[in-house]
Length: 460
Image (tube, rainbow, N blue to C red; front, side, top):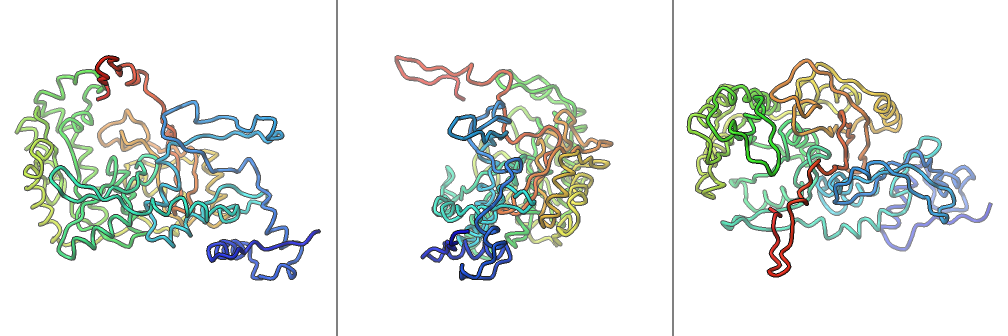
């Protein structure tokens, strides 16, 4: 065996990467001449099992054909073909790292901990092991800085990170929140968004983001619309580009009340975390006063601290004054924030708690691939990570067609993936995919260009 060199580098980052790699391998030596043959083999031969490679390419295009593909068919790849896939960029672990990091040093460590595959002995292989974590940090060194923007009325807004809540954790960055809190001072208010339905975005905000940020929310602002609640009540399907059915534009209190079962469950979910809830009812011009009053009444009856009609879409800040006052009052109400589960519980138990308490499922079903992954991650030491469910946002269940607050269903877990650097495991629920496909009638059919005026038509 030839001489082995420890690639410690001359820079401090290179030394840190190598030190982290040696620590993971249980090697405390810095002199290469003192390494045993076994230690040399550990250090320089990753022995990656190609079938275990979990790192996916990402792109911002909806293409269902990229959900599964074969790569490495070029003759220059010498027969190393394997099955792979693309994910949409918001599902990238690097996106999640960006959103959950607390500073540059923390981001470097998280990037280095990202697991890309396993060795043939079942040992996880990280970006530190590949020696690329330093390059990743350089690529992300400017992206870590939140973007300061403003609303039409001049209010400051941080726009930072974009993980979708149905396939990732769905929240703005921790750094943006902390900077905003510092700027507004102890008496100020910071509104941070948790994407999609409260059963995914809010749940992940509490159980994942709050664990890593150390921050505790004072109020949950739960956004609802009459139209969405009518859909949950069994209203007809809404199709993009097609006029809304009359059920959504004419008063229908019976349909609306039935759909409020979903709102009731979401309020229950929020209060389960010990935080007061204010319901913001975004008003459309076709909503009647009776409909808006019904939603507010049922929301308070379900346990909301307050429920307020909001017209800020039409009137700007003026239309949200009542909401702001309700939030201010709720922030002074007693709260006792708590997590939904203990991260030290087994993986399946944590998934079951979310499914039963948040979604209303009877139980979960771990399909063979998910069961296998749960065992692997437990063996590799990742079982104590929080859970980030990849689930449809169109229903509390795994089935987009089940509206309202469905009961009596078993939640199928198709697979479980690990985002170790970001700091969570994410089960794939039902048919949920991390690469969207275009609908049956894509919007490009309506888009055209006038060659004379260069006017774009049909884009919005």
